[in-house]
Length: 95
Image (cartoon, rainbow, N blue to C red):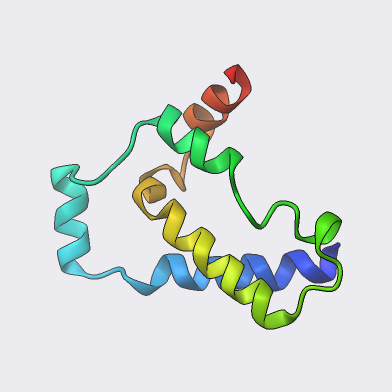
């Protein structure tokens, strides 16, 4: 499990850092395209990378990378919660 988590975490981190520039910073200030904590909780609960080890032991590395990229794209509107997931996790527990 650890062998699988580290590459996925690294790829996720790299993709989350990929699009950071001045234009994305100004969009963050305008609060455009951001979702609420409970909307992000729904996305968090549907994270396709959570069940890789259980359900897909025969999955190739390319498939894992593609799944991680899909997750990075899904989580994009919720990046503003990366520093403080408390609100998202509270909503996730309610459901």
